[in-house]
Image (cartoon, rainbow, N blue to C red; front, side, top):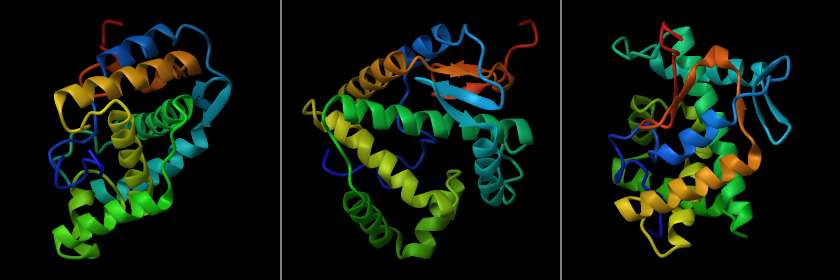
Length: 204
């Protein structure tokens, strides 16, 4: 795939891949304590609670207009924010481990193509907002999607296909293992199907 599976190719998907292997590795690496003030720790680097709070504030700008959003509450938005921040780090590590990179120009070209398809920048922002991507996060979103596309393309696959998804899942699982990801249990545990943090069950 030469361009990321963004609005046109994945309009119904909240996140780009389903990573069962990733979830298992993350769960296995959550045994140690998380540093004070950290939402997650990746290879010793903290994702701070402040960074999560800032991302939650941005997410509120789009979920406020979606009263039916099951994760629109404070806890749900926090889990979504941590998921996004961890996934950004995993994509970056997977690319670096393979000697790959994604530039701002590539992400901008993908965004421009989607703007043309959607009927303009404002309409694209509306479509992305409906998928939980606030206007302040659009550039980050396209960088992430371009990275995911590049990971699949490096193995001759399209990220929007089952084979491409498998390659991306493998790359992210390897990145998770290399980074020794630990997530603060206050945010729950990883859902293998959704590649997102889910609240812990009451019996845990």
